[in-house]
Length: 244
Ligand code: ZN
Image (cartoon, rainbow, N blue to C red; front, side, top):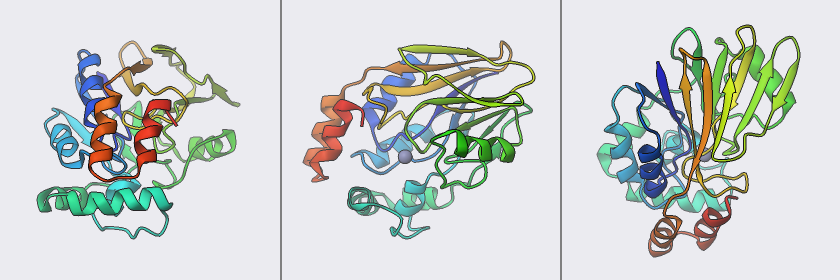
């Protein structure tokens, strides 16, 4: 099985389209939440994700707040501004669809599970080895894919926990060892924060037991222009160009 792994699309249609065009062939897609928030195309991104075949989709914190399932209290000023704009922009049907999204973690097969933030709490961040240690204990599959931080990362546990990487370059390929457990963040499609502005995504081949983190350039200028003309904070456009 070849899984396409998408996380944190954040209403960035240009990044999503370039990612799908670069992804090549896959059998099923795993969407790790935060379809909306920050970007200017929440409805179009939801429609595009809905059109993907064999999709397993879990919610992110922006999906919950955008749909009114959760209050905005945990959000900083920028995220608040963007999500209140998003809520008014969403069609009623899309708001209902977001509100009905399932929470992670979700078990996909014998090898893979997915979550938005972490396998112990959908809203918790896995940044460092301390966070990853909790994640490894909580995860129920050898490979746990997560998002939320917008930073690609690979943690391996084989009796000891280690960070491999961070994954860099246009393609970073990892062969999964048979007895190890992994926590892997393939990065953000629509708002990378690791200093590389290219969209980030993953391809996981369960037969060859390889996971590849990929980067693809997209039309940042158009995504930025849409953010500005929507009246969203300018810094949300600026950060796309620097990947922060
Ligand atoms: Zn996010």
